[in-house]
Amino acid sequence: MKKWIFILLLGGALSAQAAVKSQNLAEKEVLVGINSVFIPSGFDADSDVSVIVSGIFPNGCYKWKDAQVTHKKEKGVLVHDIRSYASVNQGMCIMVLVPFTKEIELGRLGAGHHKLRFISGDGTYLEKDLDIE
Image 1: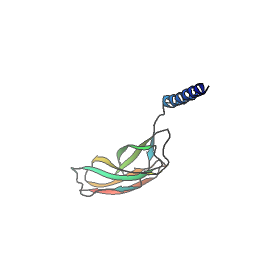
Image 2: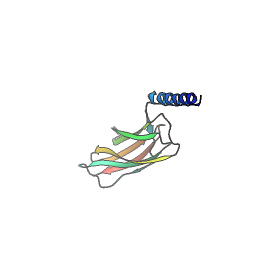
Image 3: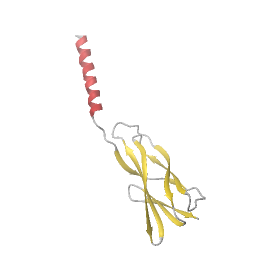
Image 4: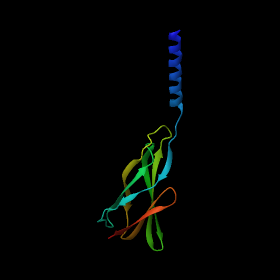
């Protein structure tokens, strides 16, 4: 009798584990906010510009994915919109704040005054100025 109970419990545990593994938990891509930006000095028109961003993910399910940069001109000023994305695992995760620091490549920017806008998921942005010689 004990043997049959053990076999039933083992079979139930294995089938529950297989059901969890068979679920294809898709990752979502979300726009994350940036808390601070470090812009090194000394860039000129011939150098590739990069900035260091940092922020905090709300839990352990978030993982840095990439950043997308769009370049445009507004009222004679070169504006660069930077959107930072994270992939979010839909499974179980640790519920702690997770800090991150990443380097974002902006490419070669022409000489002049540039505005860098780091856009958050709620539509607000952090704006920094950059002068290229």
